[in-house]
Amino acid sequence: MSLPDITARIDAACAAHGRAREDVTLIAVSKVQHADRVQAVLEAGHRVFGENRVQEAAERWPQFQARFDGIVLHLIGPLQSNKARQAFGMFDAIHTLDRPKLARRFADLAQEAGRCPDLFIQVNTGEEPQKAGVLPAEADAFVAEARGMDLPVRGLMCIPPMEEEASLHFALLAKIAERNGLNGLSMGMSADFETAISFGATHIRVGSAIFGERM
Ligand SMILES: *Cc1c(COP(=O)(O)O)cnc(C)c1O
Image (cartoon, rainbow, N blue to C red; front, top):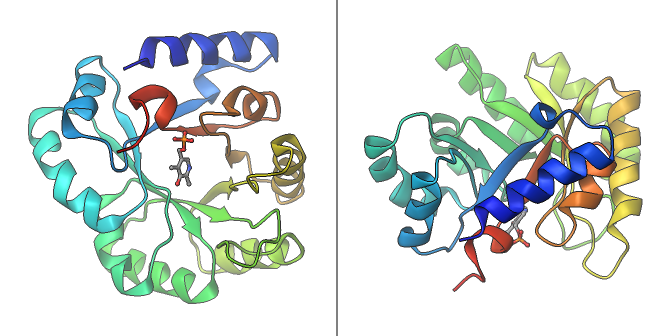
């Protein structure tokens, strides 16, 4: 477990790039990690975690929530509409809003529940056919559409293509967010979170660098 190393690197990146440390949230991505490793990170005092599958999160987190106060859960993986209700009840934030159908579903659930998780709109900055997210050219319209449904859109999220320079994608995401008056930027993973911080990331999603390689 190398949580202290990662938090030290976040501190340094914030200092180097003039970012306020409290403006950067570390989401410890615990997907597929053994429960012992997750527990070690909880015992070290960390409380913000990311999962990419609703089912896996539902199996794992109730037990931890019974034992540790203040756990905050972020959904960072794709969400099927038929899992929206379950995700809505379990997560504090959802980073993968990517289509009108899901937005309408959230709007209905929010009306029913009187609350809504914080939402990030996923943007497919690399325009990769296999990847989720709205295309950059469609992002402004989709942000407006989601806001029109009174959804709490906190910001934007991206997963840059593996083989490309991540900074180009971080810069693009930051630009789209800025012109839409959004300050949440969910970007940066184990290999590039410091770069993401330099481009304004507010939520970095770090898995293997904290927990070790996934099984
Ligand atoms: C798995 C995952 C991460 C964490 O990746 P690491 O390289 O292990 O830090 C971040 N974001 C998303 C969307 C993921 O699926």
